Length: 510
Image (cartoon, rainbow, N blue to C red; front, side, top):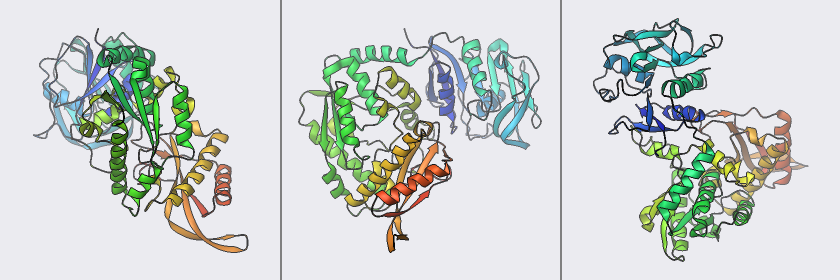
């Protein structure tokens, strides 16, 4: 039996991923498809959500899909651009309006609707982001909500199970947005099953056993959550047929290579540990450009991984810890996003090694990966680990990389992370780390003048890494960490705290 699912048609919105995440939080499996996909209805598709997007439906080249085959056949929910597209396509009128809405707005209900069942009128705040507005509804449609600025904030044709929202229920600023999405997928689409970590593990193990048979599988491990969960899932499916390679690039956190390798061995995984610190340091010598550092690390990783793999016999598959955001990025309707930075995960292995690819986590978001890891009893030290970039500390050292700089940063970073855990702050933070800045500052230590390195502490809250806010760490905590770093790490005499949010800044400095 095929997995029941909700299909989300992506019209290019920056927050389409959030729709899928919110739907999945309801225990409902959702998949994103670009509007350019040759879409066909099937028995396991229970409903369709049309996303927002940056275009105007009145533009000649605006994104479109054919509605003829799905109208009246399956429930549809349009969001923002998706709502405007439904209105215009079915005979309504969408116009450019002077009464644009961006940000928070208060909605008022005007007609009873199954979509708004259980809606608390005392928490009516929603998030708007549109310049066009619906001036005339299609025939047989009724408005179900409005704001002080626009007469149509929600509308529907319940006979054909067509529903539309001018606002964004998927963002946290829409106070009851999740309720609306749950009403759509559960009440209207009548999605019956529950998509849980336990169900996923059971189904995925069975699929992997059929897919891989008796073949041997090779997996590159990073010590992070994604590759570790992928390893445990594969191990549960095929046992000793899985072989892992864990490479120490010299850019991991202090003591991390040894700790993680031991943890892997305790779980029964076959893992080959490779000390390649010298090779990476030599390759990175004199390189300061962030993008060049990433590419160099990727190249050297591929070379070493391939070399180690050649020592193994009869390997047929290469496993990768690809997760759903990576997949979505690769099929984006706008193509891959503009290059802000190369992807943290190292690519290029499949082409070089001529192996078949297996990606056991490609359907999961990061938070879902953690839930699956908990189901598989992954070591909490790895499971609850903050996201850590593939290039490691190389992109937290601004400027060129040397062994000395790495050691300085490792010491400072360990003090910071250990203190977060001591103060019970670590698990309430999405990501934290220390950055070594390419400047020196004057200090006074004892009776002597010093001229030493500066580090910046970074801690952020985030749901998915797309946006992030800096964490308001207690002053006494910051003072304690600063004091420890300056006193215990010889060569650092100044500590600063990064209070930038994303955007405009990024989470990592490079």
